[in-house]
Image (cartoon, rainbow, N blue to C red; front, side):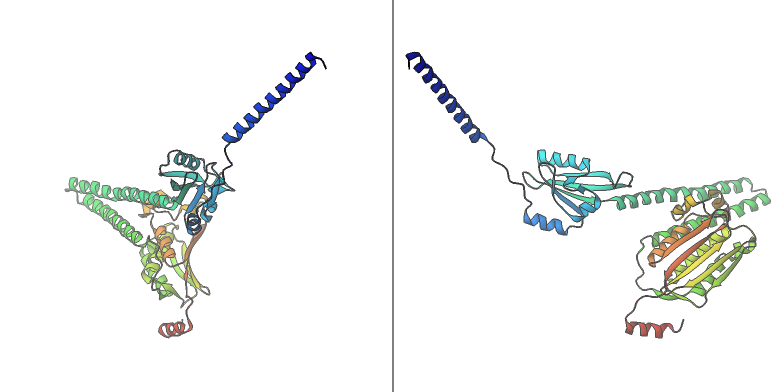
Length: 389
């Protein structure tokens, strides 16, 4: 082998050894600077236990916005799907908390499904560790609805009170100006009495509705004679019915008793009969029917009146809602009668239903408990006190 060939071999060998050294250095350097694999974040045992018993929606989110733990209500509310948060606004709040570590309270509006009603929630989001964020979410939809109903109630009461009060003011001025005209004074005085009666009825129904609106169940329901209740309700509307030739009759079973508060049930049934008379044509018929069941009694009031449009049936139990505002003005209605009926049914653990065809008439059915389940010894005492039905 000549000198030139040996030089080339030595040069090639040196190049290979140099490349190997460089490669080994780079591999060593890469291993030194490589980030070791991070273990998956785990939820502290105490937190997991608390989430399992919470009634509110609670969830823990990791640094990749994955839900690693959630309470059952969070799934029911639709906050979580698989391991992902489904509310973009909540995801944004979680990321903000992860960045700066500050606890945040916020209100969000979300929907269950694409066409579901809006759900109002409050969320409290806080850092749980360097990698985990905890979110507590409460459904406030019902509270918002109650607040809206209260605002509407106050606004409607104010509006309804303005009408008779304003009318009385104008009529008083008219009486003063017509002091020398006895006929005018008599006419205006009659209208003042009408407006005064309307104002009194409105205030009384507002008081009754305020007393009933809690829907608290009756603590001590008593046996109530249905025949007596029906007689009271018919007598309450007797003058208005007679003046228009409307016959109000009792039908169905007699001698039936129900469990409840006599005055409240009489108030509800009286409102149903009064409405039936007000919305019935002259010389028509209103029927009050009692139908006992095994555990309930159905009190139905049927008229041959103007009926209720199908699209309005779901709204007739709203406070101040009126199917025919013009007719309400002529009859002095307040729009509160059916709301009172609904609350009485709720406080008794019962229900109220309506069947109606526009132009043919309506039937309102108040379903109330007839008896409750009693222990044998309690049943014996109660039967001795009540006597035979």
